[in-house]
Image (cartoon, rainbow, N blue to C red):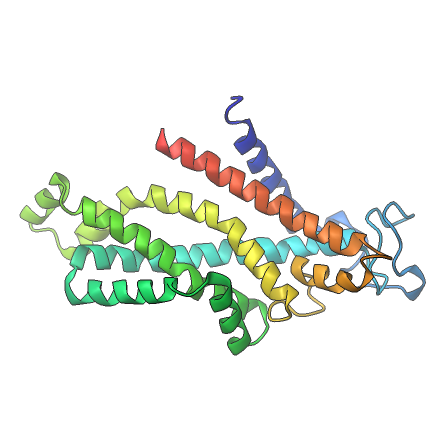
Length: 266
């Protein structure tokens, strides 16, 4: 249990974040876009504002809680969609081989030759700023990681006896691929997906920080850090606490992914 303590604690923290995101309207008396000119830039532990307020007098704790909705939604949705698309393409590429495999391999190699964030920012700028477009951007930028992993494993698995037996019994390509090969690659895909959640959260925060992601009034941790950068010497808590939320969530996601990887490998 001591060796698993970090992973279990990280899962517990992530669970609390998910519950806080779902119960956001019940946890704070304020609306995330409700501001007051007389209460702007209040420091933490001010009366009625535990984490202070921003430049528009909006409660920072409220905006961080509501911002967790965006970060967790983007992280989960982009990983789920990219993982599904990449897994299917990797399965078919590895099993079918031939011209389709060569085409997929060239696409994977070409896309991986571009730095992830540069590709994501370029797509975000082309598609325009919105929550949907951020998710699309991250899916398009990251599906190749899953496809490469699955393809490599399928190339090894397709030569094993159980696959040869299924072929000898007349199983169709779809049955061999999704009934026999898929269950053997899913554990590794789940581990990779758990490790990718933190990266997707940071990517969304980076895109929003630069103005190509989530747009006001919807709160986003990355956008909140950008909004506070002009007040670093007078209201440091705006950027610092928003950045701390990003760091804590990413750290817990990575530790939970490492724990899951170790458990699957045992």
